[in-house]
Image 1: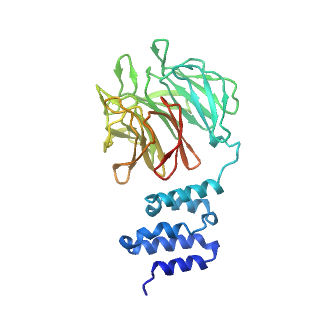
Image 2: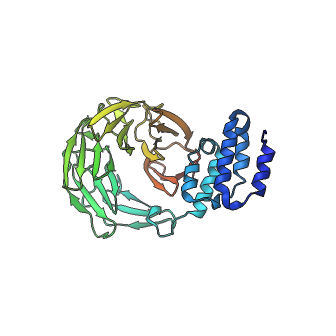
Image 3: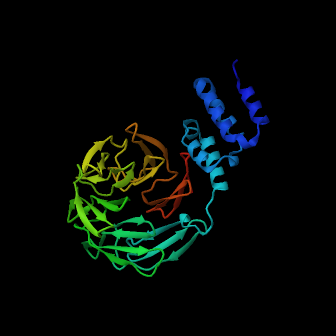
Length: 352
């Protein structure tokens, strides 16, 4: 017997609302049986579900369903319900991010609470620095390198959020660097590329929290600065940036087990000064500037299993993104030139 959309709607109206997960699964299976005819009906059926009756894990899994991801109405409906029913407490550190150093406030460190819209001054850095990079590891934030007073630094320091008394000096990196990138994986912090004494760097280093020392790892294939670095599924990815007299679209990844870099698919649009972030085992390359120094509004997503970059949507304004953090199920980005905060949810639409 052929089940039509009226039959499905009738089942939804008469259902026991404690079985929403089973109903969602049934709707997906029904649409996928004849997607050319039925995909356009999915949003209407999905919006009739009481998502609050679903568990958090199931809702997260539902967010990965292509029928949900590819439909703006469905994505926003899911995001709204996740925020409404699974919002952390007001005092949660998930709502906070740090702004550290910079051109005009070299030693300043400020925590911004997105929930209360309040900024709190934290202890000042020991060394004023701009063009540095930072990593959050557990209850600590570490800041590396950067520039100030006409020189490039290899010094590093750390602030413990629990104590919040002062920044503590860490061992110096092996090489001075600015405009580089960093990330953490397991018991190590990785720094990649950068700029030093009029030369772009391909060198990379790894800091071990166990023995408190830096060590060299294999150089990248391409020297680059102002790039993005993330960890996704046990691989270290370096994305875009600036090379010799040009902006890069090239990307490469490092296997931490074999100590080998391999080139991967390039970005659709060369960009430097971008931000990269990982969500649901996919990598996002956001904003930046092109070869002409023009601000980019585009966002690209890389699926490691497919091995290709796909351009998503665009910012509502052109900007270079200097900071991006993961809060709840949304991205928050702090735009450098514009001094704006932008929110990005699962749905490919940017909102102020």
